Length: 294
Length: 289
Image 1: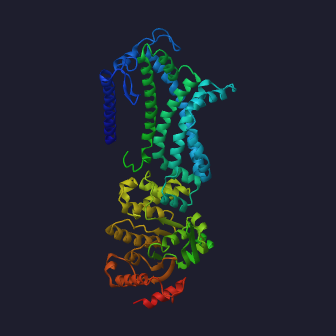
Image 2: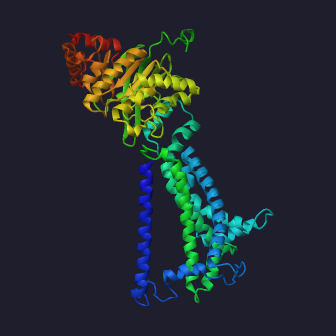
Image 3: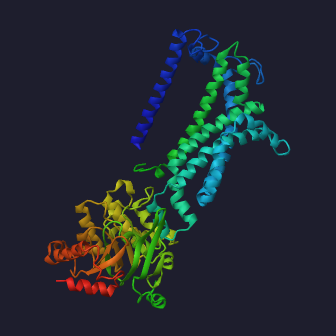
């Protein structure tokens, strides 16, 4: 346990250093970079360093404390940008969580189906891959329309469905890979033991798929957050981070630091979602490849 | 199974393994490969038989046919007096492979309990049986360890204990010591002789080590490649095995005998394809001391 704690502390320090380095690069470029950005063959590859394009980190930091000025989201004059970001984050996270849950269930079921019969794998996998090449922006209004006919349907459900659409893919692919990961000797042993499909699934295939599933879940969690925000924007759903980004970007000419505050909020959401998977990861340490200690 | 039940099913009298004219061919892209041709072999209850031969002689294929992991293309396979499939479903044999094939997320104890768990044995009985087996293979201190923490030899012991969990009348072993160093290997051989003696199980043991086959077996079945078939069966009469057996003149004589049987490949035309056990015994008796 002590070793593990040490490893986590070490990782936290690394993350802090990486963040600090990123901040330093931002500030250095902002102060010493060319005002009009860096161009290569006529294309701008690094941004302008004007206050409108790249606010100082301190300005972004202060933006969280600024009072909210109207817009679509107003909670009265006492609310700050931070309040708005947190409140929108909670909404978005909730929708993303629903989307994540749906995506994980659908992804796992698809993987099980593909594992059960090779025919399904050949038949389904191309569509699973194809599903991700459809632009989400084009899909979102369609999904939003589907729900309109049903009385129980709420607009946020469309957003969650779109998030699930992004989340199911890594789970389906990772899980399919994981379910087929047991070696031949394990498969032979279970067959010799006259184990049925269900027993083989529960005692061999599912435990073996954990090392493949965890990174998939992490991708799915981040994907669900991204999907939620994109879906919020393209379906025009209020109250979430997507709408906040939209509002702040309209004010961005005047005060870009708010937009960055919202963007940082979105990034934190993605990180929080991925970190939540780490909890699952830790709970399943036993199934990690070559795990020897707790 | 009680003795009455065994008598009823005829399991007491039936040999551990009976193979009649077993044939196995694989159809590959470049045509058909005959892996086993006309294999006849009877392994008695409690008998230790090794299958030895060059790579590609079909010894592993033969073991997998007995285990019902492969269907023979022709011929008859009886295990414990039953068709191979029935015997597999009834758990009449235990099996160990070259790789231990343990589940890394389970403790040693839980690995040994796995087959019992799969067949609905209740918890208390599972624990008791696993503890017994852990003692049998000398891993008492490691019951709570997980396979990645164990050496290769220890992992293989766990695999053997797991194979013995349901007290099978037959133990199938596919080069189980193939990946072990020589010292560990000899120790494991001593253990296996003792365990086979204590459990009274018949053993079919695939190996390509001549001394290993001779040390362990009551009979060594010598196979040749392309097509895989039995060319000779060498009876080994070394009596009770101890470490001294490895230095006894009879041990070396038997090794020489098996080596000559192997070197005689390909078999001269005087030996017919598909030697019966009787023929093979006669052949080897002629070459005996």
